[in-house]
Amino acid sequence: MGSDGRRVAAAVTMGVLAVAALAGCGDTNVAVTAPDPSVTPSTSTPPLSASPPSETELSPGWDQKPDGPAPTPDGDLDAAALKALLRTRSTAADGPDHCGPQDVRAQLVGFDAAAGHRYTSLMVRNDSQRTCVVDGIPGLGARGEWGHRFTLTVEPGVPVSDHAGPVTLRPGDRASAALEWTGELAGSGAERASMLVVQLASGQVPVRVPARLTQLPAGADDTLDVGMLSTVRISPFEASD
Picture 1 (tube, one colour):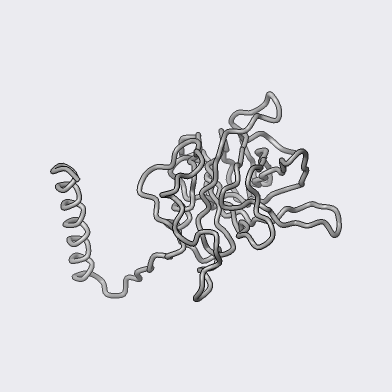
Picture 2: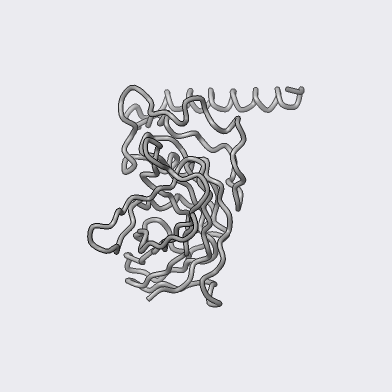
């Protein structure tokens, strides 16, 4: 590390110590959430697309179920942990009219497969009392059943129609984005995704999406076989009936 790097590191360290000192002098009833060791913190803004991970991104034992206590449930992860799961960020800029995680409910609807590729639709519904907008390609990340952050390869998908663009959602309206996954899938004994996280606009906390396929024929397997090294393509949002 050069002299500039040492100065930056020292400044960050002093800043952390200063914050800790101020916290010690403040309200002793402020709750402090311990970091979840199963989530790798993000130290920079996620890119718009994500290449295959390097060896340094894969921690030792990533392909083995860890010993010890169960990971923090997906539903208990805080905002920082959810953002740390993102592999890519949304192409849309945030704004007051944009839908946020508090406005929508998201799920995976339908399933199709051909020649090693799988397909579903990411559906978001405006469950709020206000009209808001979704636009562009959402940011994406995934978490596995064992608590690992997945290092997906994420690429932009092809729009389903010529109507991709800002979608205004009145209360109850829906928008969808085509989701495709391929490559190294999660087979027997491998860690499968338990949750996707979808960012509606850059900088936002992402929305939790259960890794379960809905609206399938009776008796069909609803699990999502996205694994640590799967390739995922996601298209821009479009209006949905």
